[in-house]
Length: 320
Image (cartoon, rainbow, N blue to C red; front, side, top):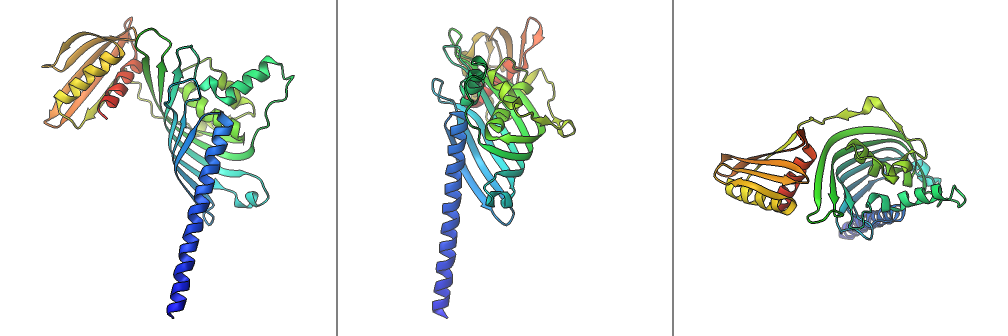
């Protein structure tokens, strides 16, 4: 009896070990493929594969800027869920029935030379090369796959401009948008979709990467589009910190991005100029350990919510 128990324990340990090795190998493979397709470094926090459920769950996927740009995160995707067709895998084909991705943040960065990080990715450069040479040269072979449906959740786009003189300009576009797409036919097309769609939703135009997602005719399902954008012309957030601490952090965030015109710590108000817009920072005490912050921005009388959200973003960075 004891021998059988020992054998059972050993079998369980071996099985768990194989599962861990399997998930580690798949995680490494996914990261390698993503880096190969985009030319940008990637990392994956966790991965689990269920053969019985025919599903893969990936957590904390991060893509970083390509060479020549600050070492910031380009795309932060906390959650990916994939429904597999295991039968297709057994025949050597990649068929995903459904893929869900929640993009927390996408960063559009312009370096000191005026180049954009997304247009410096391999997928965008290949498209531009094909166009310039009028297809004289064969395009790089794409990694073939078929994805029936892709559900894409988009949080925000952070735009950083290091090409200007002085302090870099940071704007934040809160998208809060969900869209569903069908008939994705390559890994390159999927990567371009993940990068380009949040930028288009933020109203940012004229990027080389836009052309890639259209190569295989990505179809958008309009019935599955869910807008949650509120259209506010200001940014507002409550911090579980004292008013003094929040105000001081807000003052530093504004100094890092613009010029302070007037400050009133007693009233919790800061007037400043950031990126050519007039910014008003207001801190309101909710309790001894809670503070509400409202930031508005206007330029030539028109609201600039992306500037207000940019200051709020930097405030959060200061309070980390």
